[in-house]
Length: 422
Image (cartoon, rainbow, N blue to C red):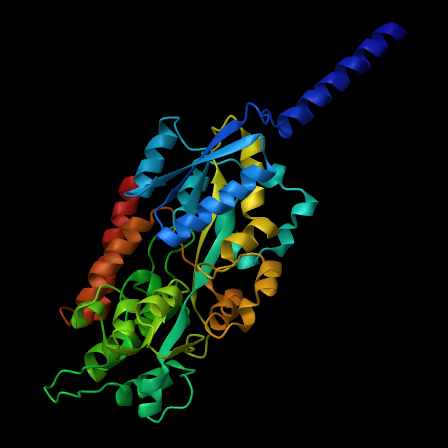
């Protein structure tokens, strides 16, 4: 009897060890026979790609049993990834934009990272606003590698010429400032400089939708941006463009982006992200500009936050090594290397403090917006939401139809497409 009991104990211990082993995969590579991880991401500027390559080489030097092969997917990134995930050919680790995260998290193709996260990783060091987009049903599926909010970029020389001594703090002030900042130097009836550069695409308008209590989507993921509350904020944007004529779209002034029309001094103010800083300083070195938090609308502070995470494929055969890579890239050391040049802002609070971006002349306003920022997400089917909004909102901006009619049409068509996709 005692012998049988001992056998039972040995069996239970063996089972327990097996369970633990399954929960915590053991690295299998060696320095002479390293595991090769495939990591996929989209294209970046040459300088950013050089920086990423250096960070990956540093990781390999500290982890000689792992090699990382980075694959750049230049076009149709999410379409390529979804095809590979379905076909069992997904990369071990890949970039995932917050916008696309809800759908992939709901499909069971991502590895939950909770079992891999240990106390010394210091998860609490991440900005909570940045973890939220990658959390689904109580589990974390991605760790944000960096982020950017939106801030007000304003031309300080244009402000001085107009007698303005500080950036606008409310939407009413932005509209008022835009009038003296709209200048027709050639006296040809067409301003050479508009006060404000408006970006009519949905990511730049969510703050207006929510300012009066509106929502982009409901809890089921259906579009709700045609509500009276949403229309109240959007109407202010349309009124300035159509009524005051003190704002301009990029197409009105022959440019490709908000950053470009601001850099060419076609507009004196624009809402842009961290990506605009190196572009403006490199491309327009004589431009004098500053940044500030976005003006409040209806007394509410608001901005968007755009973030990308490293995620792990549920299919990977190298979960331990994939976690080593993710934990290095999003750990304090790796993140400081990646964000130290200013290309991106760190999602760890401690790294932001070390790099002093909260005191940086141009980046402090971007950092200040994180606590109240709205993550850029639009439900499980963002393309339907975004495409229909953009088409109809631009139509309303151009005066082709009333705003309420345009938004109702966009909402109806988006929801019909969502129902057909389910």
